[in-house]
Length: 263
Length: 327
Image 1 (tube, helix red, strand yellow):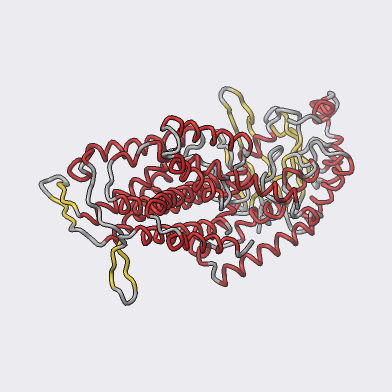
Image 2 (cartoon, chains in turn orange, blue; image 1 turned 90 degrees about the vertical axis):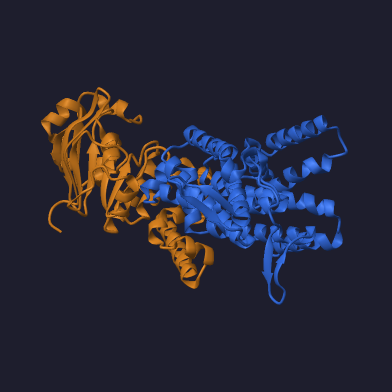
């Protein structure tokens, strides 16, 4: 494939009279970990909502793998291979961890109404295959011991981890992670970071929104800095650290302390 | 556990032999018809989490479709044309009941599942009320408040015997039991499958379900169609069992009764509607003659409040967690 996996072109989002995103363009090349950073209210989560189909943009285009996906519903975008995780509500409460994984594997199954009712051998083989896949994914991310635990009973850090797993289990080509480290302690953050790198090694491209700067600087191949609805800088972590506009607009102005709270 | 359900079915099947009392069988048959209705409602309310307060409409549609097919009708359809249907065998009426209910379930699903929550509830209520108005006023077809009468009993083709009408109480009882077991199995197969997981995902977290690629609206329509079809089958049994159908089958109270059965029994569990349906289907008849009519409803209401207060998730999940704690 030639060209970036994801391309956002001149995106604008107006919510009522408020300009959430003024004019945003950036690209995510395949196989990279790209971070989108910026102070609270910069439009990061809005951008995620538009890219993943939960909001319609006022202007602009979202191209995924060369095809226009602007305005498609989230489930269609997910089937094309672009899946997101959420900042807060991130698991299927009332279901066990294993059931959560099975639900997220929906797209790997084919069984329809008739298959479900008759439970033919093909249908049973499919169920066995999905179950094996769910178990192997839980093994891979270190949640195997929790397979039979109801998701809402998990410790906060494990719930966040499960949230990432539910998006990753779909095997998307592009994974959008919305603040995966929010509210995590340093060792949990470290674990989340390792998980994201492991997913990249599984040939997933990652677009990350995150406030934990240490994590962003360590994990990202490239960073886009968003301020007041515009991209003000783009580059490698080293370049961003020295970028004069970033420092003056934002890094130096004391925003980071406040930015640890959720956007 | 695996044999207990079949033992339960066998015990129920043995009732007409052990207790050949027509009154007992009549009460159980009617309760059984409502259990089937509750099983169908549970698929929507319990598994997808959508409260349909028009569920009685599918029941009523089934009753009318089945009664009209087996009685035949002759109506004007405009432009001087007439649509005439001769009386058909009852089994065809039963199938028509399911088909008509499914069709309306699909329609309601397409229409209403664009909205959620309170709006969905309102649309379903309106749906049932509109149908009641049609049944009341389209006198040429439905006889309006005069009701459809002399509806023949269900007849069944049996090997060696040919087509026999099921006239005795025991025969009808077994038929309802058989349909009930089928409805239960149908719902079980569905919810314990990939489709069932999609429905549960919708109930639990719709935004997340869509984000992993589950087309939730599609599965809602599937659930609505299956649920309506089962309710239509229950309505057909009701029509042929009672022998009379009037517009009151669309009354709100039938829907509310089914909701009470599902919620007290345990919504989103397979056995909840069966347990809740038997309890609240039988309470009125158990009390009849033992307490004054006013008192009967007071007891019914108090029982309901107690169940909801002490077993808020329903009887079946409540008892399950009690058993687990003791084990």
